[in-house]
Amino acid sequence: MKAQQPLLETRGLKKYYPIKGGFLKRTKNHVKAVQNISLKVYKGETLGIVGESGCGKSTFGRTILGLEDLTDGSILFRGEHIEHLSDRKLKKYKRDMQMIFQNPFASLNPRQRIGSALDEILVIHMKQSKAERDQSVKNLLLEVGLKEEHYHRYPHELSGGQRQRVGIARAIALNPSLIVCDEAVSALDVSVQAQVIKLLKELQVAHDLTYIFISHDLGVVRHLCDRVLVMYLGSMVELGTSDQIYNNALHPYTGSLLSAIPRPVPGRKKERIKLQGDLPSASNYPSGCPFHTRCPIAQEHCKMRVPEWREVEPGHFVACHEV
Image 1 (cartoon, one colour):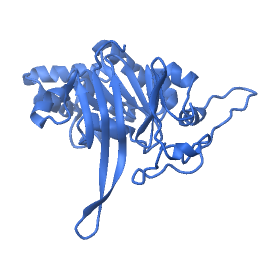
Image 2: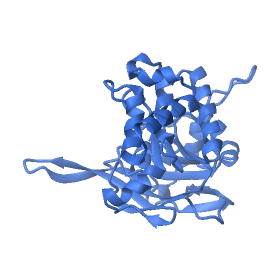
Image 3: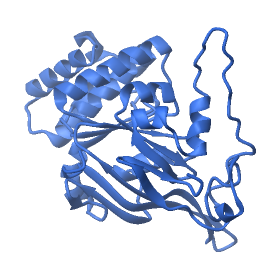
Image 4: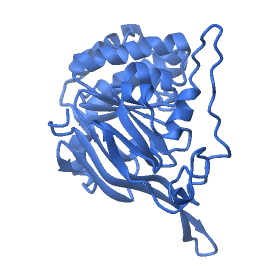
């Protein structure tokens, strides 16, 4: 995998939000939502991104798609820099990069029929007649497990799972290469989650898709993802294959996340690793290792020096002084 050119690469990606105050509304501080993310995503893989709420994983996903302006760093798609392209030049890349949102109801126009919502995408990006677009939309609905009759329905007339299938249909409508799934199944019932995950895997094979799967559900991530990136307070703390992360987690934060996964074993009590304190504010970023304020093995030097991002075994990276 390392020999091939990555489909997507970020280099030192940062996203800060200014905090303004005073009569003149001057910038007094920044919320450091994403901190120095350097990552490669390869064609055909599913990369999971996990972490607590507020760790920056969704902001990272939105930034690489151009939904948020990056503060610093580079974004390369198929080896070409796209971070400073105009909207006109970026249009052809946006066709190749799509997103499935967490809340399908909020991402659909409640006054627009499903068929019209999907047709709108084809009008903007595809040169097809009305009849061709109608057939394309109906084919999309069938491919994601819906029926032609859903073409004329409004979002409120669909279940949560059906609305998310519409979101998936919208994401694959332009035959993209990369899809960012932002908590794509977290709002669904468990039984519906399984159906949608199965659909995502089938579509990945059928359309040769690459996924960035953002989630807080580590059980789902293990089932779906080839590699996993663990983020904490906007920073990368561990990256490896699914087996490396789940069977040989090195960072104490990763260990605490894994300990929270329910694994009922009869007659055996599971030990839960509980972190002390709350997640620090991204506007008051800790010195040294960002995790040292809650880390059970932190030493004095952890408060002073930022840990080096290093490879401890092939494909397994970690940022921790004590590993």
